[in-house]
Length: 181
Image (tube, rainbow, N blue to C red; front, side):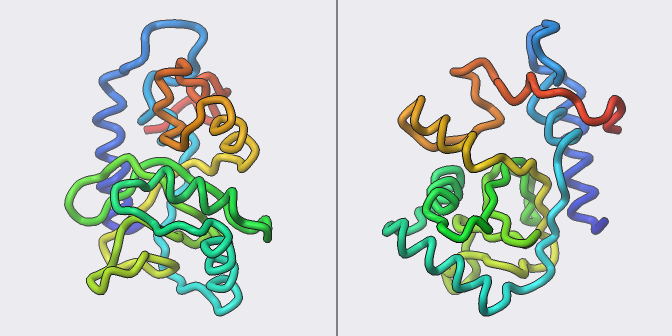
């Protein structure tokens, strides 16, 4: 685990210690931070995409027919996976650390590699595959069908973990670990 991953987990542990959910047996998590600490997978994005993987992204982006807007990470990632005909793209949501401070973020996973359509490199290109040192992602893969059903129900693509309008349904999922420290 690199320094950015350690800093990311430490940040979430501090926020999780506040326990932001109402006391209820309905919820298995005390907060969205607790949820990501328990279920999150670390993504360091150290391997570049292959030629074939880049083609999968290009094909889905073309089918999507829209530009990837800054500050629209949840929308960008969800629309891309819904435009994917290969079945290879996955949506992940959690926290990402880019050297300043961790932020709630959504991105795409392709064969375990991060495809970040929102954060740009110095040339203005989307980050696909290998990210610079100091970047870390900790997120929960969320199925395409859950994303599709939610967009149909609500009419929009937005964060899924912090879905307060629908009473945080993911925080009702069973815990994987009792101790996430």
